[in-house]
Amino acid sequence: MTYSSFDHFEGRFRNAGDRAVRFLLGGEFLGPLLASPLRDRLARVAQLPYVHGPVVVHPDVSVKPFGFPAGIALHTEPGWLYPLSAPDMGCGYLVVDSGITVDPDEMDRTAMASAYDGMLRQIAVDSPDRPDASCHVRDVLVGGLDALAAPAAFTTSAAPAEEHNDWPTELALLDPDFTDTTLQRSLGSAAGHFVACYVVQQPLRPSTPSTGRIIVVVHVGAAPIRDHLNRRGLFLDLAQDAVHSGISLEHDAADGLFAVDLDSTRGRALLGTAMAARNFGYANRQIVADRVIQALTAALPTAVVAPAVQLRHVDHTAFEQVDDAIRARRGLQPLHAARPVFITGGEHTHAYLCHSGDDTAVSDGVCCHGAPVRETPAVPPSVWDRPDLDVSPGALRGWVDTMTANTRFDESRFWADLGNIEGVIGQLASLGIARPAARLRQLMNYRELGL
Image (cartoon, rainbow, N blue to C red):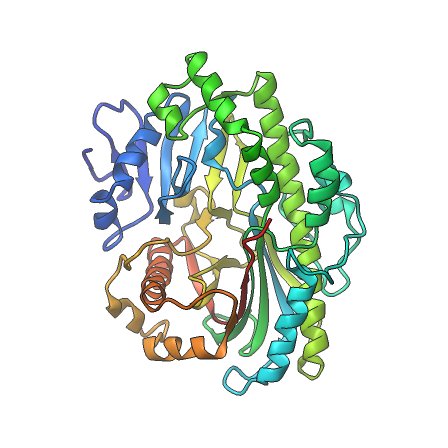
């Protein structure tokens, strides 16, 4: 690979013609990336058939299963799609200001434990007390949020979600027994990802929730649908079809880098299923958030100071129509001038609410959704001492003892995650993509691994 300066961000690969990779990284991030195995994977992605224009690489780019890295956006020519360029169909965030204010340093441990237990009873996959959803999952798959009543515990914004489904839904790839039993029962659960409660530890800009306000983040999607398609061998069949028809090379297909023709029956069915999964993700996040807010309010009634209100509801893995091409984004969320961006750290670290920056055009209007999963931080520890963020490693480590989580604390993973979240925030701010608006300290984190 050869790298040359192009708009300060764009690199071109040798023998790749007009193909390019736009790196939204600089300084400490770009060097390690270009020296890592990710470089070769990005080169392969940029040179795949039907890829149109540069592949855009964001600060949280990470190796992931299923072929394509996370933290990238790519465009394909009309009529073509790479299924595993956005495999976590329906995944996204619902972020709610709970209206509950606590003292970050003087919290009632008993009340918080009660809130955590109440939350798990409402949303854990294996909870015998988890109530059934009042809607039918088939209506959800077709209609998304339109199939639900308004949430009881919080108020949605004037634009309650950003679904942007551009194609019809399709249910043919979902077995009826799976849809009407497993998937129906999955509604209202945190299957596949996590639900976390944070407290605003430090507002950094005006018009952000005040210090002590509890912020609820529901990060779930349609993992049961993905698991079902995997068990049925759909993606293996699509890969074999791509090789047999000459669409993709065998070594690319073996690594998950295979394309589908959207004029084919299977191609149309796949895209329609992705749209149904997005509908499921949006609806399920709203049901889960409603239950979490109710559990918090029941456990902390004297701390409720304002009505709970939705701050953002957005997907960050999707296929969408952009001009005359199809954009696949994995781990990237659209920017919106009036709605905050949530950037997560690790399972035991802090996170951020951000505002859109002054130069969102360079990123095509999207932003990463979290810190990269790297074993060591891509930036030196000095970044934690930036005066504009006032981050103290000692204080951050001390918070872990006060939070409730169902995952084991790993000291080395914790410090790597700290460096990575601070590095990402610094990259976004320096490139003008997004600016930190509030630092969030974690109170509770429930990672649900069951489906």
